Length: 212
Length: 121
Length: 294
Image (cartoon, each protein chain N blue to C red):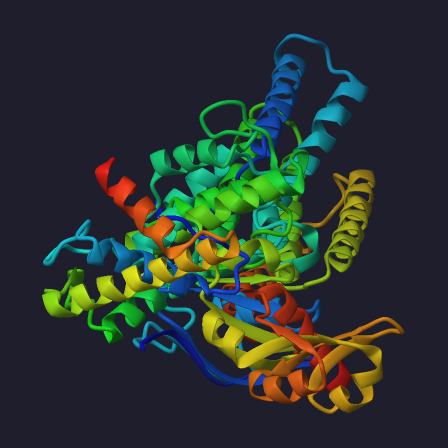
């Protein structure tokens, strides 16, 4: 409950969650239609598959966007307000944790729904992995004060993710299981490190460890 | 109470003078509480320190005294002193009247007569 | 007199700019103005007091009780409002309400609505809602002030609250200040920064003049007005009077300057006329003096 309240504190005033949910609903509807009614069609199945990769990534970005902006003095996101609150550091830590939880749960939900109509489990798995990669990046960039640097880093990750999707999309059925396993393990490890990093450095949010 | 903002007389002295007048004339009587420092500042739209200084001045003059946690109360006034002060005030006013009379050439008799007339009104 | 906030050995180093070392106290039960030119360090000082940034050295004591700017109990009692962009730009009044209810124990929703009415805020928590970025600076500031006033606090620390307000609103803000002080009956205090002091003069009890990261002068306004005088005189006497003036401006018709009150007689002997400064003329004189010394 406390986590949810703190999360809310940093993510007011946007309808992004709702828009994203609607977007996913459309994709899921397409997926079910494809599977049950319409004949297998290349373009639409490609569309549904790619959306399944994109939506979890966007979700991770949205979930941690508020706290990320609150860390940037130049983003116009009321960083003085957040820093001056009682228990500012705790709220921040909880909000980051909340963002991580929401994004992981959301991704899991998307994957479960997708498993009813997506034929390739590999695609499902990549959607989860990509979401985790994005989450890790979002965790790592939380304390970078310059907003532009954060954006550039995110853009680079999106490019990187696009590359992976393309790469595996080509060889979808030929990837050996060992590679899949390693990818999973590495991603999970990186993610764990990012989470520990972001949660243990919350002092940075309160400006205590600012550079001179 | 009326205050002149851009006067040579500091505002706190204006306030003290007006309270003093009210106390002397009996409009505020012994044992009455004055408005609170911050309340008066709010009403008069002036800063707190100004009213505080006015009350300090009056306290020094023995007109009022501070009661812990209650505010400022009007002291019993020494009637002899009050009378003396009134007399001094009267004298001053009469002097002003004489000054004015001299300026427009009114004689002493005429001035006394004027006072008599005014008394009868 | 008790101090609401006292600062000792406070220092903040920001690249080229250094604030401090500062040592001073702010008296309890009054409204205190931080006065200084742009870049004097007013905002830095306020940010330090509100825990937005942290000191490089030194201490700030709150209410004579705690030295910890991060203490939730202290923050609960401090009403802080930054100069601009205090709230995220996409927030609407209802978001402010929800966030204040999450973050503070002492926020009163009805009071917020009431004060928004009093201050004539366009985007109203009970009527139409507009995000911050669609509001004018004045409206944004009014919304933020209403939110801060709607909390039950012991001290208000406001950064440039009057700057973006029109004269009428500034007058109303002064009323709000006096109301707040009256309600506290000596227990509540206000600290605010400003660089146009004239409109706030009647809501200022104590002044802290700052220049280039240092404290220039502190004192109760009425005392300061007796400590200094404004002198004006004929240009031929200027060379002699110059020695007595802290800061001055002179031309071929007249000279004008700020001096210590004890030099009043000497200046009068030079044919100058003297008058009590207003807070405005005093500020200009003192800041000019500091600028000259720099």
